[in-house]
Image (cartoon, rainbow, N blue to C red; front, side, top):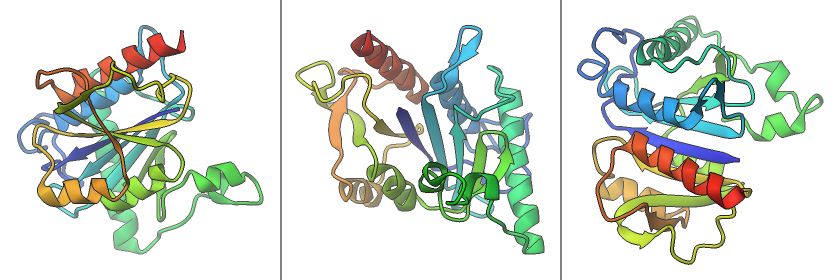
Length: 227
């Protein structure tokens, strides 16, 4: 299983996300969307063994975390606008339920009597937006806690040790979670939060790369390790 936690420092958390201005008023939502596409989309297929959690801290009602689960995901297309619509729909649904005080737990996913595995894989207060897409108000640390309890944590930065050199812990088959940021670096406070979860600190090479390109390189590296 491959998980990606991506921090969106300016990503809008209000339901008024404009699909016509994802980079500007959306708070670089275009970048987060490209990360989602890179994480899931293959040629004529999507990866089922992947989860993506985008933690959004921008204006509106932060924080908001939207999780995409590949083994349940439907309606994901490779264009930015349709994925932006999925995110906007999640924000609209969450806002409406918060206004009406109609928060609920999705019994099909959270009832321990039915599927204890699903229960352990659910964030507190998470609601279903559409198949495979779930939204909550969990903060960055809560999302890190969720994944650190079940996987190897890896934070990426170009200044750290190269992922290709001597890290046999990454077999391509074990569950691993990669922590990335948008076009802004992690703040010192965010780095402190990450450090509490004792991640491996690795790089994908000496150059500063776009976050969505990092996701593709990670998949390529682990695909090769697996095969």
